[in-house]
Length: 388
Image (cartoon, rainbow, N blue to C red; front, side):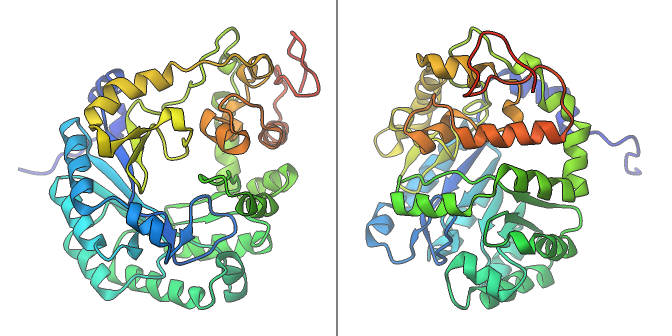
């Protein structure tokens, strides 16, 4: 029997996919197995020192991870992302990885690649991951180590990446656009696309720390690009900006203005996925750290969190008139970093306007040539949407 030959169909186009989306099933989850990292990047929202004893003691054990993963699979999960911190700091990383694979899960791994050894490559060859996603902080030693704050990290990164690529392990590369590497972004793009011609992404939007560390947050803010710089680097990347232009009518849509609605969550958080923190906290997404939205896996079950916590959190509403007159009515939400999770990290409230996010959204919309109804702004809070 010959193989089937026909038109290519994306998984999203199968009727089964619509059926899965119509029921709130668990499809995937993010698993932070540590908050510690061997690098000390200024922009990172989660990295604690590699030797942080308290953080290490709070980390989920292998048996706890296995229990959570088993519950997730029972509820329908088929994909898990192992992340951190730097997950390879865990000496039991191979055991965690194999355990997840043996449960039938597709497994992705986020890593900085500096700790990759031959035994990791052998593990990935024997039990292939869905993909390994590696962060690239600079194309030169000087820039890379300015970002990581770790002498010797560039050589370790190059060595680890070479081990992965030469072995044939599927690798994807990504970058953060920062003040410290802005001058090198074109070179970073060339470097990344050399290794992964079909995939490369960069992110210019930084959000603040999960632990609220004021000194660290100041460092993140110092690394942020201006709205004008963000638009400039996006326009310079023809692949990225071309996609934005092509989907402009989908990204900027007057129907996104939730006028008269006070619900906080209009995103997909908790509809098909969830996140597990290094210390066992269930969250609807990896960015959501507001205490009233979390659930402790160490005192309960995933079934309880999924059936009871998720609906309760998604039902949360705002009573802040400023928020309801500005962000809630804005058609530029898909061009903005604003969401309840990021709002909480920035302000301590899930329904606060964040001026920087707003400025970026305005700049992107202008660059895309948007001429329709504009957003409410902090300077012009009226009942009539003005021109952008």
